[in-house]
Image (cartoon, rainbow, N blue to C red):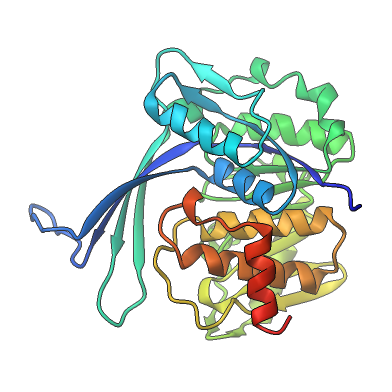
Length: 321
Protein backbone atom coordinates (compact mmCIF):
# COMPACT_ATOMS: atom_id res chain seq x y z
CA UNK A 1 0.00 0.00 0.00
CA UNK A 2 1.33 3.42 -0.97
CA UNK A 3 2.42 5.52 2.00
CA UNK A 4 0.42 8.67 2.58
CA UNK A 5 2.45 11.85 2.11
CA UNK A 6 2.81 13.83 5.35
CA UNK A 7 2.26 17.50 4.62
CA UNK A 8 2.44 20.41 7.05
CA UNK A 9 0.53 23.59 6.17
CA UNK A 10 1.25 26.74 8.16
CA UNK A 11 -1.18 29.38 7.00
CA UNK A 12 -4.48 31.19 7.13
CA UNK A 13 -8.10 30.54 7.96
CA UNK A 14 -10.60 32.91 6.31
CA UNK A 15 -14.40 32.80 6.27
CA UNK A 16 -15.53 33.89 2.81
CA UNK A 17 -18.68 35.97 2.45
CA UNK A 18 -19.66 35.80 -1.19
CA UNK A 19 -22.00 38.13 -3.07
CA UNK A 20 -22.94 37.39 -6.68
CA UNK A 21 -23.92 40.28 -8.94
CA UNK A 22 -24.20 41.18 -12.60
CA UNK A 23 -23.10 44.76 -11.95
CA UNK A 24 -20.33 45.82 -9.57
CA UNK A 25 -21.38 49.10 -7.92
CA UNK A 26 -19.46 52.26 -8.67
CA UNK A 27 -18.61 54.77 -5.93
CA UNK A 28 -21.83 55.95 -4.30
CA UNK A 29 -23.96 53.49 -6.26
CA UNK A 30 -26.28 50.80 -4.89
CA UNK A 31 -27.18 47.78 -7.01
CA UNK A 32 -29.32 44.69 -6.48
CA UNK A 33 -27.28 41.50 -6.21
CA UNK A 34 -28.25 37.98 -7.27
CA UNK A 35 -27.17 35.78 -4.33
CA UNK A 36 -25.18 35.61 -1.08
CA UNK A 37 -23.61 32.78 0.86
CA UNK A 38 -20.76 32.02 3.25
CA UNK A 39 -18.08 29.38 2.83
CA UNK A 40 -14.95 28.55 4.85
CA UNK A 41 -11.65 29.30 3.12
CA UNK A 42 -8.29 31.00 3.54
CA UNK A 43 -5.29 30.08 1.39
CA UNK A 44 -3.66 27.92 4.05
CA UNK A 45 -6.81 26.05 5.06
CA UNK A 46 -7.88 25.61 1.42
CA UNK A 47 -4.55 24.04 0.49
CA UNK A 48 -4.64 21.81 3.57
CA UNK A 49 -8.17 20.60 2.84
CA UNK A 50 -7.35 19.99 -0.83
CA UNK A 51 -4.27 17.91 -0.03
CA UNK A 52 -6.22 15.94 2.59
CA UNK A 53 -9.11 15.23 0.20
CA UNK A 54 -6.54 13.94 -2.29
CA UNK A 55 -5.23 11.42 0.23
CA UNK A 56 -2.39 13.21 2.04
CA UNK A 57 -1.85 13.05 5.81
CA UNK A 58 -2.12 16.78 6.58
CA UNK A 59 -1.41 18.83 9.70
CA UNK A 60 -2.64 22.44 9.76
CA UNK A 61 -1.24 25.24 11.91
CA UNK A 62 -2.95 28.62 11.92
CA UNK A 63 -4.82 30.89 14.29
CA UNK A 64 -8.54 31.33 14.90
CA UNK A 65 -10.76 33.43 17.12
CA UNK A 66 -13.22 32.05 19.64
CA UNK A 67 -16.18 32.70 17.36
CA UNK A 68 -18.73 30.96 15.14
CA UNK A 69 -16.60 31.40 12.02
CA UNK A 70 -13.66 29.74 13.75
CA UNK A 71 -15.84 26.83 14.87
CA UNK A 72 -17.14 26.25 11.34
CA UNK A 73 -13.68 26.40 9.76
CA UNK A 74 -12.14 23.97 12.24
CA UNK A 75 -15.07 21.59 11.73
CA UNK A 76 -14.56 21.46 7.96
CA UNK A 77 -10.86 20.75 8.46
CA UNK A 78 -11.63 17.93 10.90
CA UNK A 79 -14.18 16.49 8.48
CA UNK A 80 -11.44 16.41 5.81
CA UNK A 81 -9.26 14.36 8.16
CA UNK A 82 -6.75 17.12 8.93
CA UNK A 83 -4.79 17.04 12.19
CA UNK A 84 -5.82 20.31 13.89
CA UNK A 85 -4.25 19.61 17.29
CA UNK A 86 -1.74 22.45 16.79
CA UNK A 87 -4.26 25.09 15.67
CA UNK A 88 -3.88 28.24 17.78
CA UNK A 89 -6.53 30.53 19.28
CA UNK A 90 -6.69 34.24 20.04
CA UNK A 91 -9.00 35.00 22.95
CA UNK A 92 -9.75 38.58 21.82
CA UNK A 93 -9.54 39.01 18.04
CA UNK A 94 -12.00 37.66 15.49
CA UNK A 95 -11.18 34.96 12.95
CA UNK A 96 -10.16 36.16 9.50
CA UNK A 97 -12.85 36.84 6.93
CA UNK A 98 -13.13 37.98 3.32
CA UNK A 99 -15.63 39.87 1.22
CA UNK A 100 -15.89 38.36 -2.27
CA UNK A 101 -17.80 39.90 -5.14
CA UNK A 102 -18.48 37.53 -8.03
CA UNK A 103 -19.46 39.34 -11.21
CA UNK A 104 -21.53 37.15 -13.51
CA UNK A 105 -22.36 38.60 -16.92
CA UNK A 106 -24.15 36.65 -19.65
CA UNK A 107 -21.72 34.90 -22.02
CA UNK A 108 -18.67 36.17 -20.11
CA UNK A 109 -16.27 34.45 -17.66
CA UNK A 110 -17.04 34.97 -13.98
CA UNK A 111 -14.75 37.57 -12.38
CA UNK A 112 -13.96 37.86 -8.67
CA UNK A 113 -12.87 40.73 -6.43
CA UNK A 114 -11.66 39.84 -2.94
CA UNK A 115 -11.05 41.94 0.19
CA UNK A 116 -9.43 40.01 3.06
CA UNK A 117 -9.71 41.07 6.71
CA UNK A 118 -6.86 39.04 8.27
CA UNK A 119 -8.01 39.09 11.91
CA UNK A 120 -6.27 36.40 13.97
CA UNK A 121 -4.15 35.22 11.03
CA UNK A 122 -1.73 38.07 11.69
CA UNK A 123 -1.41 37.44 15.43
CA UNK A 124 0.67 34.23 15.24
CA UNK A 125 3.82 34.66 17.36
CA UNK A 126 7.26 33.11 16.91
CA UNK A 127 7.10 31.33 20.27
CA UNK A 128 3.89 29.56 19.26
CA UNK A 129 5.55 27.71 16.38
CA UNK A 130 9.01 27.25 17.91
CA UNK A 131 8.23 23.56 18.60
CA UNK A 132 8.48 22.97 14.84
CA UNK A 133 12.26 23.33 15.02
CA UNK A 134 12.31 19.74 16.28
CA UNK A 135 9.06 18.41 14.79
CA UNK A 136 9.44 19.66 11.20
CA UNK A 137 11.47 16.61 10.19
CA UNK A 138 8.34 14.46 10.61
CA UNK A 139 6.93 15.87 7.36
CA UNK A 140 7.52 15.30 3.65
CA UNK A 141 6.73 18.89 2.70
CA UNK A 142 5.93 22.29 4.20
CA UNK A 143 3.41 24.59 2.48
CA UNK A 144 3.31 28.35 3.19
CA UNK A 145 1.45 31.40 1.82
CA UNK A 146 1.46 35.18 2.39
CA UNK A 147 -1.63 35.49 4.61
CA UNK A 148 0.23 35.16 7.92
CA UNK A 149 3.11 37.27 9.33
CA UNK A 150 6.12 37.10 7.01
CA UNK A 151 8.48 36.54 9.94
CA UNK A 152 6.59 33.32 10.74
CA UNK A 153 7.07 32.13 7.15
CA UNK A 154 10.81 32.83 7.40
CA UNK A 155 11.09 31.11 10.77
CA UNK A 156 9.27 27.92 9.75
CA UNK A 157 10.88 27.77 6.29
CA UNK A 158 14.31 27.97 7.92
CA UNK A 159 13.43 25.09 10.25
CA UNK A 160 12.40 22.98 7.25
CA UNK A 161 15.43 23.94 5.16
CA UNK A 162 17.81 23.01 7.96
CA UNK A 163 16.19 19.56 8.27
CA UNK A 164 16.06 18.94 4.50
CA UNK A 165 12.27 19.19 4.24
CA UNK A 166 11.06 20.67 0.91
CA UNK A 167 9.31 24.03 1.21
CA UNK A 168 6.55 25.33 -1.08
CA UNK A 169 5.65 29.03 -0.86
CA UNK A 170 2.48 30.01 -2.66
CA UNK A 171 3.45 33.69 -2.91
CA UNK A 172 -0.07 35.08 -2.69
CA UNK A 173 -1.32 37.62 -2.03
CA UNK A 174 1.52 39.58 -3.61
CA UNK A 175 3.94 40.97 -1.00
CA UNK A 176 7.65 41.82 -0.77
CA UNK A 177 9.61 38.75 0.34
CA UNK A 178 12.68 38.93 2.62
CA UNK A 179 15.82 37.96 0.73
CA UNK A 180 16.52 35.32 3.38
CA UNK A 181 13.28 33.50 2.60
CA UNK A 182 14.10 32.83 -1.06
CA UNK A 183 17.05 30.58 -0.28
CA UNK A 184 14.91 28.31 1.90
CA UNK A 185 12.40 27.63 -0.89
CA UNK A 186 12.32 24.42 -2.89
CA UNK A 187 9.25 25.65 -4.79
CA UNK A 188 7.67 29.05 -5.25
CA UNK A 189 4.26 29.31 -6.90
CA UNK A 190 3.27 32.81 -8.04
CA UNK A 191 0.66 33.69 -10.62
CA UNK A 192 1.56 35.95 -13.53
CA UNK A 193 0.85 39.15 -11.55
CA UNK A 194 2.80 38.03 -8.50
CA UNK A 195 5.90 36.99 -10.45
CA UNK A 196 5.87 40.33 -12.27
CA UNK A 197 5.74 42.10 -8.89
CA UNK A 198 8.74 40.05 -7.69
CA UNK A 199 10.90 40.25 -10.82
CA UNK A 200 9.60 43.11 -12.95
CA UNK A 201 9.17 40.66 -15.84
CA UNK A 202 5.81 40.51 -17.64
CA UNK A 203 4.96 37.10 -19.15
CA UNK A 204 2.65 37.53 -22.15
CA UNK A 205 0.35 34.70 -23.17
CA UNK A 206 -2.44 34.25 -25.67
CA UNK A 207 -4.55 31.14 -25.23
CA UNK A 208 -2.11 28.29 -24.59
CA UNK A 209 0.80 30.17 -26.15
CA UNK A 210 3.09 31.42 -23.36
CA UNK A 211 6.22 33.51 -23.90
CA UNK A 212 8.70 30.94 -22.59
CA UNK A 213 11.64 33.32 -22.97
CA UNK A 214 10.12 35.87 -20.61
CA UNK A 215 9.07 33.12 -18.20
CA UNK A 216 12.63 31.79 -18.14
CA UNK A 217 13.98 35.32 -17.62
CA UNK A 218 11.70 35.80 -14.59
CA UNK A 219 12.60 32.38 -13.22
CA UNK A 220 16.33 33.05 -13.56
CA UNK A 221 15.96 36.05 -11.26
CA UNK A 222 14.40 33.79 -8.61
CA UNK A 223 16.96 31.03 -9.17
CA UNK A 224 19.69 33.58 -8.44
CA UNK A 225 18.06 34.26 -5.07
CA UNK A 226 18.17 30.55 -4.17
CA UNK A 227 14.78 29.16 -5.27
CA UNK A 228 15.05 25.69 -6.84
CA UNK A 229 11.75 25.44 -8.76
CA UNK A 230 9.48 28.18 -10.09
CA UNK A 231 5.86 27.16 -10.70
CA UNK A 232 3.93 29.88 -12.54
CA UNK A 233 0.13 29.65 -12.76
CA UNK A 234 -1.24 31.47 -15.80
CA UNK A 235 -5.00 31.30 -15.38
CA UNK A 236 -6.71 29.95 -18.51
CA UNK A 237 -3.26 29.50 -20.11
CA UNK A 238 -2.36 26.69 -17.68
CA UNK A 239 0.84 26.36 -15.65
CA UNK A 240 4.59 26.34 -16.28
CA UNK A 241 7.24 24.75 -14.06
CA UNK A 242 10.84 25.89 -14.56
CA UNK A 243 13.99 24.47 -12.99
CA UNK A 244 17.53 23.45 -13.91
CA UNK A 245 16.20 20.39 -15.76
CA UNK A 246 14.12 22.50 -18.15
CA UNK A 247 10.57 23.72 -18.62
CA UNK A 248 7.38 21.74 -18.14
CA UNK A 249 4.11 23.18 -19.44
CA UNK A 250 0.58 21.94 -18.85
CA UNK A 251 -2.59 23.54 -20.26
CA UNK A 252 -5.55 23.99 -17.95
CA UNK A 253 -8.54 21.65 -18.19
CA UNK A 254 -10.69 22.47 -21.23
CA UNK A 255 -14.45 22.99 -21.56
CA UNK A 256 -14.89 23.93 -17.92
CA UNK A 257 -17.80 26.22 -17.04
CA UNK A 258 -16.48 28.60 -14.38
CA UNK A 259 -18.93 29.13 -11.53
CA UNK A 260 -16.47 30.63 -9.01
CA UNK A 261 -12.70 31.05 -9.56
CA UNK A 262 -12.08 31.48 -5.81
CA UNK A 263 -9.58 28.87 -4.49
CA UNK A 264 -8.49 27.71 -7.96
CA UNK A 265 -4.85 28.49 -7.14
CA UNK A 266 -5.13 26.87 -3.71
CA UNK A 267 -6.59 23.73 -5.24
CA UNK A 268 -3.75 23.63 -7.78
CA UNK A 269 -1.06 24.03 -5.11
CA UNK A 270 -2.60 21.41 -2.81
CA UNK A 271 -2.78 18.92 -5.68
CA UNK A 272 0.71 19.75 -6.97
CA UNK A 273 2.32 19.21 -3.57
CA UNK A 274 0.45 15.95 -3.06
CA UNK A 275 1.70 14.69 -6.41
CA UNK A 276 5.28 15.74 -5.63
CA UNK A 277 5.20 13.93 -2.30
CA UNK A 278 3.91 10.79 -4.02
CA UNK A 279 6.88 10.86 -6.39
CA UNK A 280 4.91 11.17 -9.64
CA UNK A 281 6.57 12.45 -12.80
CA UNK A 282 6.31 16.17 -13.51
CA UNK A 283 3.87 15.99 -16.43
CA UNK A 284 1.48 13.80 -14.43
CA UNK A 285 1.68 16.15 -11.45
CA UNK A 286 0.87 19.23 -13.52
CA UNK A 287 -1.99 17.51 -15.34
CA UNK A 288 -3.39 16.26 -12.02
CA UNK A 289 -3.15 19.74 -10.45
CA UNK A 290 -4.75 21.49 -13.44
CA UNK A 291 -7.71 19.12 -13.55
CA UNK A 292 -8.16 19.34 -9.77
CA UNK A 293 -8.36 23.13 -10.11
CA UNK A 294 -10.71 22.73 -13.07
CA UNK A 295 -13.22 20.89 -10.89
CA UNK A 296 -12.84 23.54 -8.18
CA UNK A 297 -13.76 26.49 -10.41
CA UNK A 298 -16.85 24.67 -11.66
CA UNK A 299 -18.41 24.84 -8.19
CA UNK A 300 -19.29 27.63 -5.74
CA UNK A 301 -17.31 28.50 -2.61
CA UNK A 302 -13.72 27.82 -1.57
CA UNK A 303 -13.58 24.70 0.62
CA UNK A 304 -16.96 23.33 -0.57
CA UNK A 305 -15.62 23.21 -4.14
CA UNK A 306 -12.39 21.30 -3.41
CA UNK A 307 -12.66 17.81 -4.95
CA UNK A 308 -11.77 14.39 -3.58
CA UNK A 309 -9.25 12.03 -5.18
CA UNK A 310 -12.07 9.89 -6.63
CA UNK A 311 -13.60 12.94 -8.31
CA UNK A 312 -10.28 13.92 -9.90
CA UNK A 313 -9.54 10.37 -11.05
CA UNK A 314 -12.98 10.12 -12.66
CA UNK A 315 -12.47 13.45 -14.42
CA UNK A 316 -9.06 12.40 -15.76
CA UNK A 317 -10.44 9.07 -17.02
CA UNK A 318 -13.36 10.85 -18.70
CA UNK A 319 -10.83 13.01 -20.53
CA UNK A 320 -8.77 10.03 -21.64
CA UNK A 321 -5.88 10.17 -19.15
